[in-house]
Every structure is written in structure tokens, then in C-alpha cells.
Image (tube, rainbow, N blue to C red; front, side, top):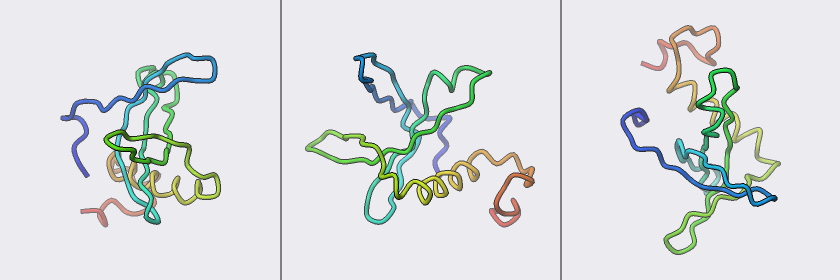
Length: 108
């Protein structure tokens, strides 16, 4: 896993139904069942210490040189969420294994 603290932010701008634009940070990509997915963080909640950080999983489609972010299939969300939680646990583990799915010693 790459050290995300030393990289420039990979930002994507989205528009909601009312035309309001908002940005999200692409944190990482992964593949599952021959489909590429992206993990995105909502920048507004990431910078607010009182807000719970919003994490989104989006399907990635490539059209020419452009990446298109689409909603992930609902029937795969349980599997995708488990994968993403595992990835986040690996990166943000505070070595207090009470919340980890496995012992931190197993990761070394």
C-alpha cells in the first residue's frame, strides 16, 4: 500500500441533481471480479473534526483517456465494503487490535 500522506490529492468533481458541484478525493483503486473500483472520500466531511468521514465506493469505467465514476452495483456492496474496510484497517491501524479483524502481529 502506498503512503498516501506524501502524494498530491487526486480530486474528482461531481455534480448533484440540482447542479451543485462538490469534490471528492480518490484515495485508492482496487479490482474485484474483473472490475476496477475507486475508494473516494468526501472532502467536506474529511476536514470537519465533528463529522464522520464519508467513504464512497464507485465503479470505474475508462472511456478514451477519461475515467468515469459510476455507482457500484448494490448487490455487490457487502463484498466491496468488506474489501474496503480491510484496506482501511491496514493503513489506519493504530495497533489497538480491539477493532481489527486480525491481530496486528499477523500483518508484520
